[in-house]
Length: 438
Image (tube, rainbow, N blue to C red):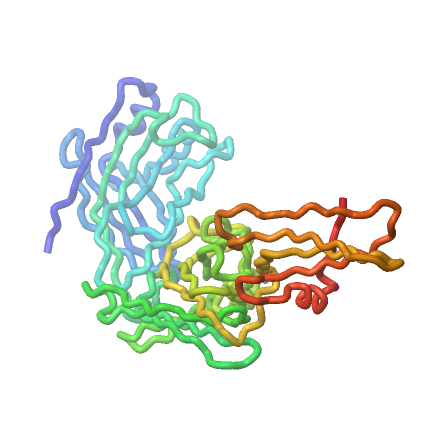
């Protein structure tokens, strides 16, 4: 079946020199020859249908994921004028480009003029990978003249002499390997928190019941015990096709990176809020790729200590796919995103957990007892807060000591609200406490 091909005119501009005009005016057809890496070849042409217009004779059909050498020939009655074009190469440049998705990378010119600058009658291209069906796009050729050509010139810097656009396709090859950079279908992500000191594992699942369908993602809450060290393992699945995506990530660990963001106050270690906003912020990665860079399928976490209630926050996990760009500094803006899920995290109060080491003690009564070393009446002065952390002011008694007397000072501290002798706690943790005097 014939396709309707888009065509563009051949312009012979008044600004060209007579010599260049004479050479180009002889062109009556253009031939593109594609030579694949296995040495197979095919050619397409565009022939002049009137004094100004070139009409492509057929579409360009490329095999998927294939490297081609492209040779452009300018013909006069079948005679190749390429040598003449190359001879004018110091003022001419041929540009090849393609429409969306046709090529895996930009065309690379491989021929040079006498100044070592690209001419473009020889290019290398690589067709894109195809997953389903064929890619339909365009392939464009433009010949441009420059008053002065250098290594940085672009098409817009010169005068366009001619432009031709072919319809182009990349053909799906059922025997070709899967596309390396295709977006994975991941419909189930499982987080497994294993206490390092033993105990019950905590599992939370995020699943999409219909994969790419309209139903919403279902995300379970994560309920972790306070003051506990955990190892987090992540598994990923495509349950629709029965694929273990975790294994694929392990095989391509140099292309993948998990990033984490979490609410402050739910974890004691790592500190901060994660490395989604700043790659250099701390996260405890327990796995590395072949280049010694972190992956994130295994990480370590220590939950915060809590005294009252069950504090909650969020844990966001982002899986980035970064082929050929993963580095020690690559972050959230680099590569494609395979997973971006936020869980709710609840830190559960454990009545059997030890007191929080760095918690602020409630001390509402301090008693100073001055005992004369040679005998006599002791002097007692109390500082008390009648409502503890409430709005009432601290009440401090004066200390009335006798002159020229040696005293021993003893200090006792209490939390009268909860009936706690804080002095005993300080004696038990005396290596952590120090009184200073002024």
